[in-house]
Amino acid sequence: MILTINHVTTYRYDAPMRAAVQSLRLFPSRFDGQRSIRWDVTVEGGTRGGSFRDGAGDKVEGWSMRGPVAEVSIAVAGQVETIDMAGVLRGHREIVPPFAYLRETVATWIDDAIETLAQEAAAGADDALDRAHRLSAAVAGAIAYAPGVTHAHTTAAEALELGEGVCQDHAHALIACARALDLPARYVSGYLYARDDGEPHEASHAWAEIWVDGIGWIGFDAANGCCPDERYIRLGSGLDAREAAPIKGIAMGAGEEKLDVTVALDAIQQ
Image 1 (cartoon, rainbow, N blue to C red):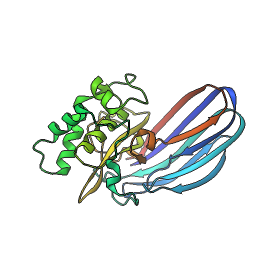
Image 2 (spheres, rainbow, N blue to C red):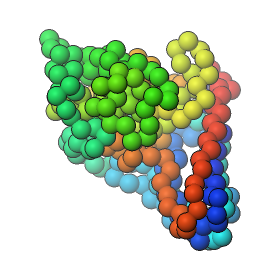
Image 3 (cartoon, rainbow, N blue to C red):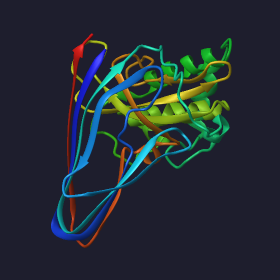
Image 4 (spheres, rainbow, N blue to C red):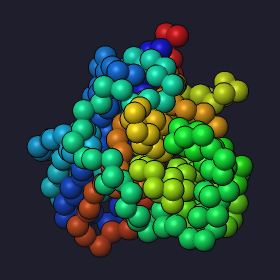
């Protein structure tokens, strides 16, 4: 499938800022399941800085803006060819060892409820792959998709207690459950073209990857009850949403910030 993406993120300030710096992780991953045909990232009025590929294989690029800065607009436009790899991240080059992703974070802290959910879901599983699938199904059943109930700083434990959340919460809960069973797991940011019912999914998306010995990293999207396929564009990964964030930055000044995001994703060839 060939997917086109147009993604604009705009930060507006009620008082001009002295300067702003952005670290962008907005570039498609390199692996057997996707190939960039064209991809452009620009920051209006910004100066492009250095870029590098980190230990997890993700490209990171820096931008800076001199003040007065009233608005920062980050635009992504591109085309990516994708292939259904049944969720397997084959051909991805990275040097961070899988066991590094056993470390808990505030967002993925394992409380008693998460431990219980993980143990009950994995009971009777044949192997690690079976356990991973069972965990994804258990999280999907325990947390109903409900936009607006949680927020950016909601933890996996809090979402599980609420029983509602969005893709970020599903990913955090699945990661916590996997780590509770000593399965390395990480958060993945990207885009999703459509849900199983064919409805357009006009937003950035997130899912989890779990390491299975003998296979490698496998993606699990508990929010949609599937493994990532040709509808997904993978950008980057991290221990949680904060670490894997496509955009990180800081603005220097006293102005209040407002955020506006628009994402359009379409398929031009299937």
